[in-house]
Image 1 (cartoon, rainbow, N blue to C red):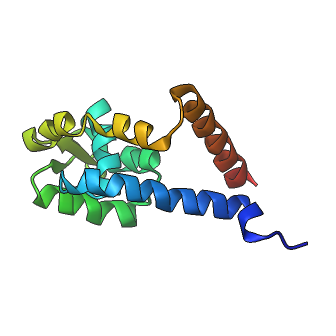
Image 2: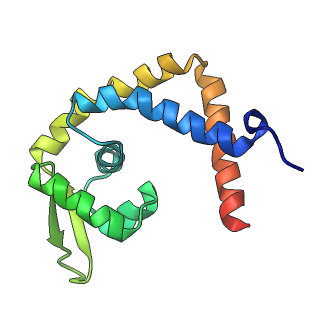
Image 3: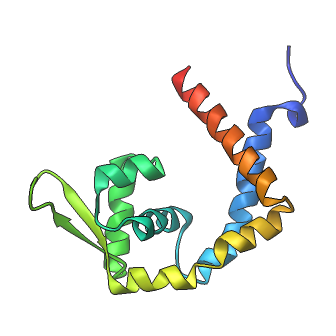
Length: 141
């Protein structure tokens, strides 16, 4: 059985992702950030000085994607990359003062996204939880 495109959950998620990116783009352009860079900074703002592996797990990017992104962020002066003193195999990512300062400049972003969603906080939270559950079930399938 073939479903019409509007009835397909994959299309609903795909098109919602594009719409979400459309909302984030001008907000992040003002900060000179890409969406993946914003995700990395959000993780570091919550807990600074993390290994590349820990960051990758949280933002769900493989190291071959994350490493070049982190190098560009280091070139922009947002983070530093250094070998972990306790385990030389690990690279630790730490915010610079400039990276930390972006936290204040980005503080309005979640409220802007909430407003543009047209949903109440409780509804958006439930939707996020449902999508996360769907993602986890699909990964484990």
